[in-house]
Amino acid sequence: YYIVAGLVFITASELYLRAEFGSDYLYDAPVSLLHMLTASTAKAKGEQVVVLSQVLVADVNLGYEGVDNSMVKAVNGVPVTSLRQLAELAEGCEAPHLRLNLRGSELVVIDMAEARASIREILQTHNIPAAMSSDLLRDVKGIDPAGPVIDVPATASGEGSVGVAPSVDDFIEEVPSL
Image 1: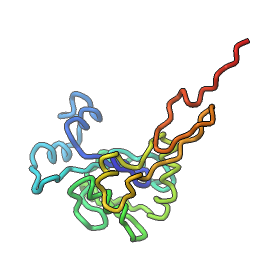
Image 2: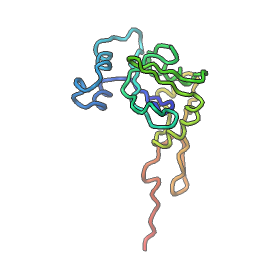
Image 3: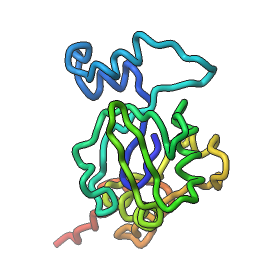
Image 4: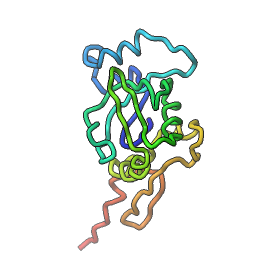
């Protein structure tokens, strides 16, 4: 996965379709996604269908809450061929806005300064330890191997960690016995 401005991107797969649409995914999933997964073949090694799977609501993505399960065609005019490439394009974006062309004529435009400023809060709000999966952290050019992690709040015992999502037990204080 990869998250920018609360937009969650993943690669489309049968597993994803089953998780998102249930066992009847062949009938319930968007036809465009099914077509891309079943009728097309990769033109190059590593080519993937990338999907904007959901939007984690935040001020930076206001108005895009209903955009989900949409195939990503291009980022700032560059055709998207893999999740890794999308992450590299977004992370390396020096333009003021990130423009995402989705299947059909949908266009998502995100202010990059606001996106960078809000990612920590978005990840903390949704208890997500990093803005990208560990495989992307290793592979995406220009990313610190430590990755864009969040600071996890200190636990009741005063201990905290970086990059690890806290469990519920971390916030439960021991109740003194009577």
